[in-house]
Image (tube, rainbow, N blue to C red; front, side, top):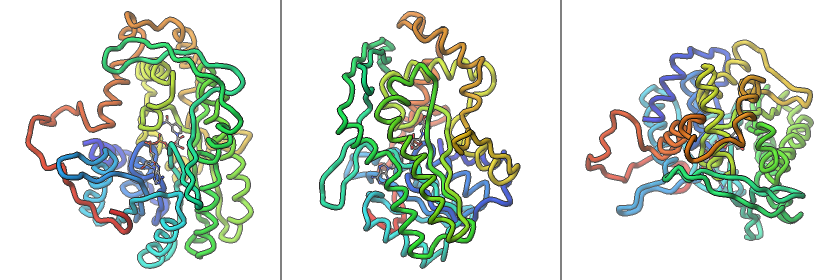
Amino acid sequence: MDVKNQIEHVKQAGVIADGPKRVLVIGASGGYGLASRITAAFGCGAATIGVFFERPAVKNRTASPGWYKSAAFTRAAEDAGLYAANLNGDAFSAELKQATIELIKKDLGQIDMVIYSLAAPARQLPDGSLVRSTLKPIGEPFEGATIDLNSGELRAVSLEPASQQEVNDTIKVMGGEDWELWMAALLAADVLAEGCITTNYTYLGSEVTWPIYYHGTIGKAKEDLDRAALALAQPLKKVNGRAYVAVMKGLMTQAASAIPGMSIYLSLLFKVMKAKGTHEGCIEQTTRLFKNMFVDSALQMDESGRLRMDDWELSDDIQTFVKANWSKVTAENLMEISDFAGYRQAFLQMHGFDFPGVDYEAEIDPEVLMPLAFGE
Ligand code: NAD
């Protein structure tokens, strides 16, 4: 249902005639990556290759949400006559990069756009060791609150500052190094077409979340994306390519739901953006991004060369509301001053629940097959 709705949105937004025709999405099964893939396929008519790490159904245990979403996307793309191939495995590994290159050579020859939208809790290095990312403040402890999704109660969150090792590890997992490794491997294999574009997604957010996000461990990893985008300019000259970091809006995704304090911020944000008519989901964001890039040629860049898609989130009227209400939220007034109901619905829908018109009592077979070019 989620995928169907997203496809519908893209179709209604109209054809992006000059968009890319062969697109690789790394982190294609959820949030911004899935939405980017849907926009590329159904907006631009692109052949897409999706890389993700999802769990298929085993016996009576259901598959992960991203598995079902990718299977639904693949069916819809094939029904529309669009090429869609999937690789399920660890995007950090050299093996998966090589399998992707072989697939591109075999089926598409070259690609016009690489979207890197990975959000991973850990990264396995070639020597087998595992590096974990953390969501912690730097320098000072973080004292905040989070909302219990079931009870609607507020719970205090208190986090000690990260060690330098934890900062370095978060950069290793969520920074730009793996993006650079992908681009180097794709360039070396000569599978990037002339004028190829690559994008990576970042978040800056509001001052109220800076202590845990932008000024925290994840913020350091995001700074490293800016470094990587600049570093990629030189090697991409070989194909007249460009690397962009796009700043996206804060939204409920698997990755965002893990960030302490984000539930209050997003509930307030949804409230005021819906009231002003500027609320967007992932698909509205990626469709607007593609339109800016390929239809209007009106890229909104900041002084650091990042594409800004968080302009509506950071507008003065929105942020004034968020800041004024940030410290006023209680379990009692949550439903009035914030859109906690909308936030909770977004969480449920991310897992496939709470869609109107779906019979959740119906008997279904949890095993849904999906063609895979790699993995199982
Ligand atoms: P998400 O959790 O919805 O999706 C993450 C994707 O990464 C999934 O497809 C998952 O399968 C894939 N993945 C994770 N580990 C993998 C691995 N080892 N190998 C292969 N695939 C793997 O996340 P999201 O929120 O859409 O985040 C995507 C990017 O967008 C991140 O860089 C994030 O920081 C950024 N972003 C998110 C927000 C937000 O509010 N959600 C805002 C701005 C930017």
